[in-house]
Length: 399
Image (cartoon, rainbow, N blue to C red; front, side, top):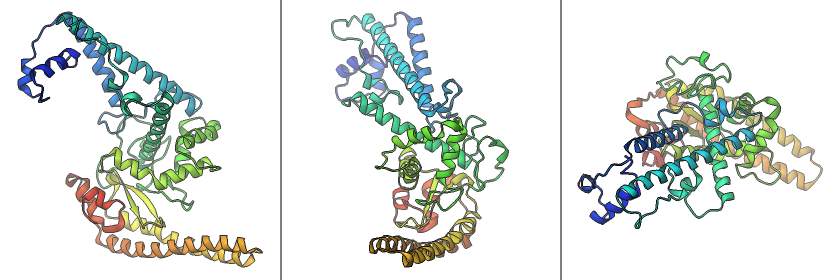
């Protein structure tokens, strides 16, 4: 492995297989000269260990245990302090890996007598650790740009992990994957004492504050739980600053906007169009949207979605329209009346959309659709017609 990952092998393969067809033939023709065997074994072993720890720090790894920001060795009073400490760790690991690769090159260059042909140096963008922004985002950016990109992605990973804790996929009390079975069977709420998992695996992601268990207030509660409550405001500001906040927008509004408009797009990218949290959406007006954890979905989920969310929301929207109608009548200026009418028009569009969504939802709820995890996301996602967002992107069909 040391030889295969050295500059020497790269040089030899370019000579014996100039078409870059590196199958077992050219690989088998690479001459093997081993010196300092013990040093090479140690270098390779340490490199593998660093790479595995890096890979397992992200939730798409099968061996993911917890978010790196939340591990005890990074315990700090604020999120920003924890993140700063984490960045220092990342830089040290990247530098260590760079040194290991260069030492590995140095040993083989000397063994093959290629000191006049090759140098051992490895540029930062070739140190293939996800925690290394020069590799993750490609070369040619300033250090400030790298820092901004890495911070934004780290905050998005924090939000994704928090959603996982809400769903019951992860827990602040136990490492690793907690629930990934089928149909919500044997789901154990007692495993989520520090931060309780959602009752049913249905998390609204609304652009307005309609539900207590909406993703936005629950995420804020997660941050308040994971770090000392007295640092909540500065932690929310740190999070919002990484999410491209609009001018004069509060941190809560920025976070809500991200969860409502962008989280699912990022989730699709992370899981390569095979999402584990499915976005049920009434349409472009976003009258109602929620995430459902596929492992907790069962044939009663859609009925519960109707009774606990969609039906009450219809009543709440009607009441809100009535309230604004009274406000409009009481308005003393034309500009205020116009502003209020705009709110009324928006709510009426949502009302129409929600009614159509409810009709579809009732139809599919009556069907009591079951899913088989062995069929995969693509097949199961297509069973819900137009209730789900991004159906075409996921199934390859028009839904």
